[in-house]
Length: 134
Image (cartoon, rainbow, N blue to C red; front, side, top):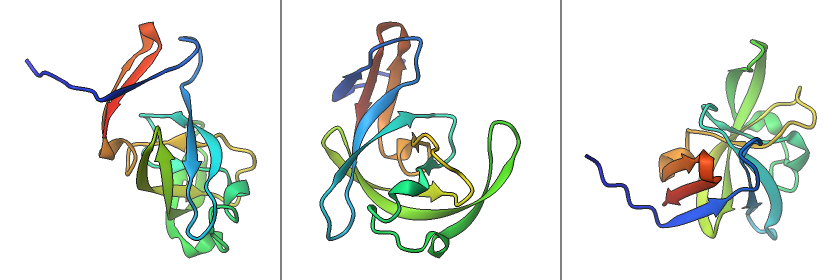
């Protein structure tokens, strides 16, 4: 048997909704700004709406690492991955985040690569709790 020890928890309002958490994006040389992002264990990489690029300190979307992404409806898109610094529940971390010029008003997602890799995490969806230790 494995004994898991979690340092913190986040309560979310409804078991019938996606789990959206508050984060801060911390651009280099600028003030942090608030966003919400969905905890998505099915996403390989985090993704963010292109509307935050400039505020995140990214002036050229194509300067990131190119990456093909296939969405749930099997549509393929060209994305660009940039490293961004975020603050999640008081913990600062640098994560790779995909931005796509073809996506408008997408929901921010926190995915496996970079984000969930940095923590021990568990959902107790019946009690609407997300437990984590970084």
